[in-house]
Length: 436
View 1: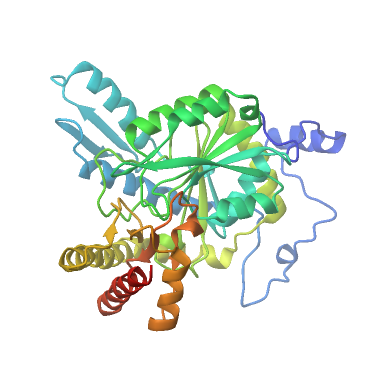
View 2: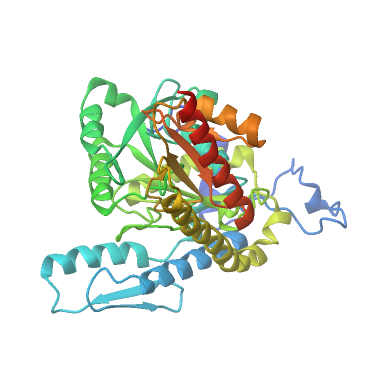
């Protein structure tokens, strides 16, 4: 696998080589130019303690996060029943052990065992990187994997963040198509054809958003198997954005996280912004997994990037236990709101006599896509909402929908506000249709 030439020279100067040799023998080196004021009794009383540069984030915070992730994995495994008679146990170290009864079909057993082993493996704190946001994580990973002009693949329809960050990093972004036939799916055949073409040699990573925004679609099990195989074959990395994973709405069976994937080099992104429904809680993380040799080389280079930025504050790290403890309650609270609003939306659309508006199946996330007659211009509909109802919205073309006639709607508002919004959309659609 080719990493960016921007990061990680393999050559050490004589001083760095000597330092590494001495430290490998367990000898601690002091430095005559130590400019860390907290080591010299100059720390302020408001921020006491001695600062120790840990580019991946403070080890204590990463250890707390690793325990949280292992507990979450164990709970998810215990709640799933895709295979007959399997049990999940949590070990003393927080990892999980899975077993499948011998009377299961042998092929089913083999597949299930492999998947369960991937998900029940301990989360290593040294495979975690703490940083301020998943947006920052994208910039790090683009630097890690891509030289200027290299390509990162991102989903279409999708949130335009990937293209924007790619532009800032001098990385080309190329959209791969999600298609809809009652549910969203990835055109894997198109991806395979691209990767086998001359242009495919410039592709360094693929972004898989699980579930995607605004389509709300999870990566299906068969898609996952095919995508991991393609990435392994063509030596490209997976960047798995899973910030909405916990917010299931109308999912299909078998969806699971890409975090911890061993079949290809994988960087899984998550953070408090979505887990706590708190965009101002700027804590994100990268979990690195995959073949050991690739992980080792990726982390060696990622450490250089992390060391250059040192983005994570000890002040924030001290709040990690409290924030992690708040996650389950916040998830439940938000899920109750989004599920109730989605249920109310279905009722309102069923009761609407005009029958002009429908909702695409939303497997997960906070948003849904409403579909209205394509003869109505999306801009005209939003302008109608602005002028007649003092509301605005994001039409489908904001997300590169391939056809006209879509509007993204949030499921987060309080019920009365949500119902008002839907009523306004229905009225605006009717008015616009009369004007066509």
